[in-house]
Length: 457
Image (cartoon, rainbow, N blue to C red):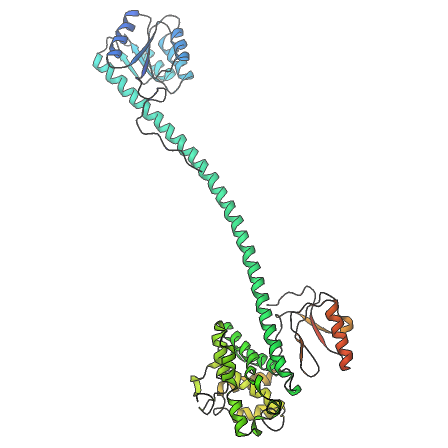
């Protein structure tokens, strides 16, 4: 929207065509006075209209563009006061001058009050004074009209600005709503992508565990335990997420182990087997190297066998030179492995495993991490990851309905991952769950999100 440009100051009076002289209307019942005024003003470049009565003057006023009116005071039928009052009513913007041949204060006062004259001029007049008064009056008139024009222009521009601002505000509201909707859609898409990513990693880690039923669910349990230890050890949400993913992938380097080695507890491995075992973090680092955006995750996986006293692999890092994520992963992984029997010849109870972790605190493990584990284990059993802190309840497969959302990962009785949290059930999946229960002769406790349950907190 383009705003109008203002006219130059002191332009030709608005009633004139640019470059044309001002028009003066002279009204007097004496022809000689009119002739004298006509000669005087024409010499100075003015156009002159002459009328011998007030009625004739009003007629000229209606038919011509006039810039200034000079009227005699004493005229028959319509005197100067009456005439100038009519002029004021018809064209209030015109400058009005009064000629008077006698000192009639009452008449002049009436002209001022009723006709609102600019000046009165006594007869006989001085030509120079007359011309000066007229020029001054025209300049004043031009300034007044220009002021009014500028005020009108400012009002018009203000209205245009109001309209423009209203339009812009509406456009901003519309655009803001569009951006908000786009942002929400991106957040949903990002959350969905993130969920797919975690699900893919869970499925991949469970494939490694298929070769040894004893290991079923190990990576997921380690990831959950590490995730719950992270806040107490000062990790921010981003670091905790890196640790969670690293924990799910920590065994990826064992993918090349033969079946015998995979089933042999670390304490019973031969020197050759130990050499291969100690190299599995480096193998994992090689496999994950193409994932440049997972640099911190890969670093945790690569240093998981470093030990607090410097006796670990591959670089013999000591204490806090080991990434905090790797120190947490080592504790979480070994705590679960001790219970499985994959580190020592025999599996241990939770209490036995915790006692051994405390015994090795300060040598193999970071004491701060072990103490955090002790506090966590002493309070409660670590809870599996959920899609969010929402209300859930447990059902048997015969109570499942399409549209229900899993609140927790669904695992087999041996700990094998079947479906991940957040999966929305349909008829096909429900049928597969029931068939699986029949095949293993067991009933699964299936945790689903309560309908309409919003995230708590």
